[in-house]
Image (cartoon, rainbow, N blue to C red; front, side, top):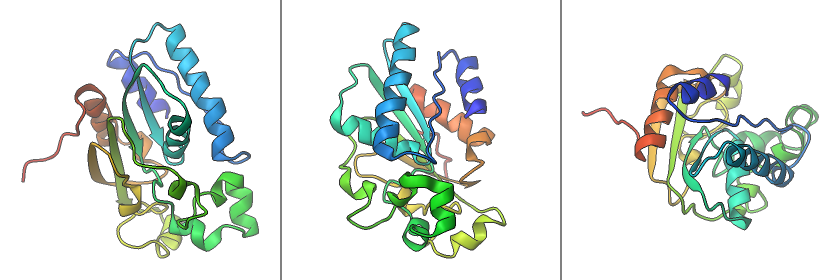
Length: 202
């Protein structure tokens, strides 16, 4: 998220870039650690409105936190490649040694069934823009065969959506590297400023 953070700072935003050990703890634990830390940093900087930009599982971390906590200063949020309805990759591989070793306990929570974290979270009620990708790396292409429809190698375009979102944009970017893409960064800034993405006119 470093390039996005730099762009946000360059655009006049104060930032708090919070990392968390997603490979070793659950979504719930990450939410209760990372979000309060970010809020504390923003409040210490004097922020009156707090926006969020998340990547991948970070979208579920934010949604879980907001399901039980209110953020009075909450502004807008942009989610990049979020598995808001889970991922078929988790359906296929959760419980296998390699998948569990790489993704930790949170990886198993990404399944698409009723036991998964996404199914337990309701619609969003804050201004949310979502960017989904349609490109895969050579490594991702193996996983992509398990995903229905267009996807970014890990998350299907349709599964990135969530009820209540304000805007949705599909770009030819890969899941892992979309955070470094200039168009993604520009669209993120546009949504945080205006509450919608800049869609091309047909």
